[in-house]
Length: 171
Image (cartoon, rainbow, N blue to C red; front, side):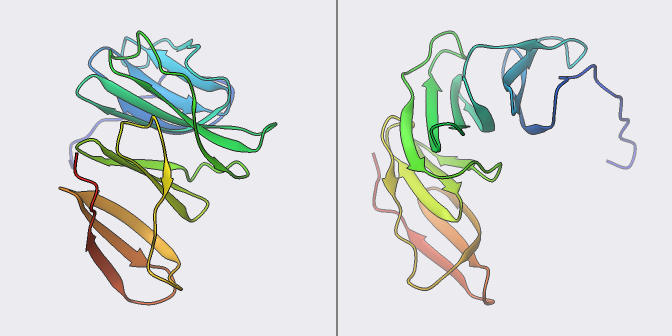
């Protein structure tokens, strides 16, 4: 890592990239103007028609893409899923009513997907088709969340406590 070389890319232009994801065929950047794609390591970028909103996160694994995005005029957070590396997409799935935040971050373990949105947490056990509010320990403001092998790790913002639990949603 000490020998890393950085080079500036040619965009995407028009704002900040809130997230980046490398797929088997392209580099994707989520922006306030949707998703941009580069098939040549960032030399050129094309706006995609994947979402009509502000893209806050992109999750890629095994040719599956899940995108979290917000539509500020509707005050909602939505997700879409592709099982074929972005060729076809599901209809948008409602996650929550919330004002826009770039903090909507996706995490996955197997079929289970968790998104954090405005300090609330939602889980999907069907690759983002449906979402459910995820219970968290009472009175705890979560600072960090991650999970693996259906185990959940939550670190509290207002204390030094770390919570660890098993998710009962195996598919």
